[in-house]
Image 1 (cartoon, protein in one colour):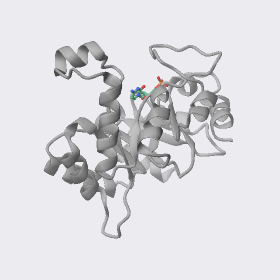
Image 2: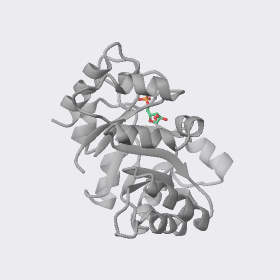
Image 3: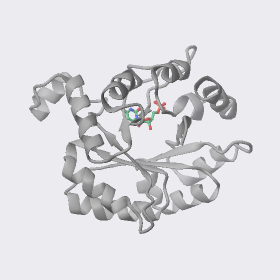
Length: 232
Ligand code: C5P
């Protein structure tokens, strides 16, 4: 899969998602379904959006004992999603078990990404709450390398970390980056942001864009703008 724009469909119910997606009559965007929508609507929302012709990144960030993650990943694989993810802090063994669970009988599987350190965790909370005393950048890179070692396809990271991850884990190791804003847009609650053009320059493989598209008065135009800045 090449570079693409993934729309974070952070809506509270199915009707709102469908009426949003109905606006896209031309190119069918890649969509991200998060925990809120999945837990409220169940797996049926994934089947329905898939049936409408969209690729799906199911952002459920699994983290449990290896056996449970393996079995849960097998369920997600049967849902025919294109990308799913987990927490790298679950250990290399957990990530290897996830790959086993995801892999179908014919050898195919969805792409699997790792969340390294959540961007809501900073140096201070990592040290105080998790008792990890290393530099957060080093922890992020170590987790990315672990993900690569376990056979994962890439990481979800800040666009500011994408270059570093590629330098250390190789160009083929995917970086999927949220925190994208237009140069003339509102940054909202995101702290460290980049424009789609900057994310392209730094080497992000996919950008995840929510409110700059979903809250726009013309979502299709906002999406097309992202595509033209990032992909074309
Ligand atoms: O609306 P906005 O563009 O900020 O949406 C970004 C999406 O990416 C949201 O679904 C958010 O949960 C997700 N995300 C993020 N930062 C991370 C990981 C995920 O913003 N580090």
